[in-house]
Length: 79
Image (cartoon, rainbow, N blue to C red):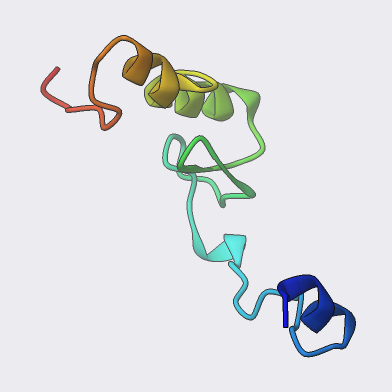
């Protein structure tokens, strides 16, 4: 039986079994309670913190930009 048929018959639960409680995490940049997980970072609602996370990650698609340049997608902190 394929996935779609099993889902339609109720054999597969489409609801994730685990959820993440954001209140358990602090913003990695300012320390406030995190409200979102963006650019591989826990961030509060502040645009400044989201922008810092984006810059740290290399911007939207930063890992693919690095790959296109022939660089490793994992950023070495010693770079």
